[in-house]
Picture 1 (cartoon, rainbow, N blue to C red):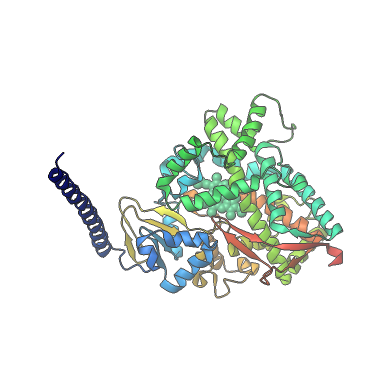
Picture 2 (tube, protein in one colour; picture 1 turned 120 degrees about the horizontal axis):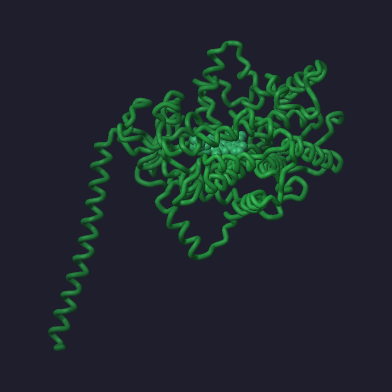
Length: 507
Ligand code: HEM
């Protein structure tokens, strides 16, 4: 090649390089122009929100990083009003009416793809299936396994775990050591849900979490909370995990379930005649052709992942608040003492008896209200018709969500003392007042996608709280910041409460 040709080629290359830069610049400007055009023409252009949220998903990401989605979400609404922008196509609503429309039964909206990240990327379960129509076909046959009748068959499993829990409290009362209340409640809730689901405890109350199963759920929730903001990456992340053979522990619960399922199918671990667990009932559904083996595996796994941390959070909150608000504890104890004196309270307390104790039920509702287990907005996607609500028209495809924390701390709904633990609010004589509270109670979600396991949690709470408060006092210890009750949120808002256990007579 001659010298001059070489120079010519170099010049040529330079020219092509410049061309690429200009092309990219043009493409970038085009995208910016499209974004500005869409923003200016969007019916949602006037929705206020943090600056970052207009262009990126970073605002939500930093709320998760700070472990404080509930407080930050409430603060956003206090600053900007009932409709705020969380991300370019995601909005949070602080309106009871809007919540009903979004989550409600009639014409409710599909879940957003956020939920895919709480399950496998290509096979959806009851929780992660986003389409309401498909969801209904999964939910219909399962509903009877969570019904009031089914609950009666689960009660003996709860009794077994309650007596183990009380034994553990007795040991702590004896040795005077500080107890991590949330951890113990998690051990309890895991063991109960293991018993109810597959007739077998994890043994956490007795031996602690040696296999690290609690961490597995924590990791899954961190994954879901973050990946849920970029669900288009879920499939790739799952595939990469498989290809790289990364051991994230996510198989631990399905493996536990699979072990018990196989043993039951092969007739190796029959239950006593007088007991029937969830697994028994699922196998019956399979025989009747109402469920597949996939549904069985998924619903057993789901019971454990969705029904353990949540119940533990609610129980920790109920106990901690009762002891932080001694007047509520006294009122509850008076109710229990009166029921016992009238011969209406056995040991163990039955679910039927507990349901007839209005103050106990009010305490449970108030604990669930003041500290919802799910700290993130429940996000849905607007259907093809668009949606007019809360003063805005949301075009098809917009993601809109309602955070239970935001609604529960809304003073126009729950009153100026919304931030106070006051079970009495649930005992209002006025039926309409009570109906407003019920309508806006979102701890279990609402509508078609409402928590299917709600009654199981209420069964556990209704039976174990009376047993605990009848026998024990808890001295709540302050943390280094002087707080008795603190919490951290990824998807679940997990409280931190340290206590010293005393027998009631010592209190
Ligand atoms: C205090 C305890 C509990 C709380 C606060 C709670 C909370 C919730 C919430 C908020 C939802 C709806 C999520 C959404 O709409 O985005 C939900 C759904 C669900 N929960 Fe619970 N839950 C609890 C206990 C349980 C238990 C004990 C089980 C199982 C035994 C369970 C299984 C489920 C399932 C399977 C769904 C999905 C239902 C569907 O989409 O049809 N939960 N839960």
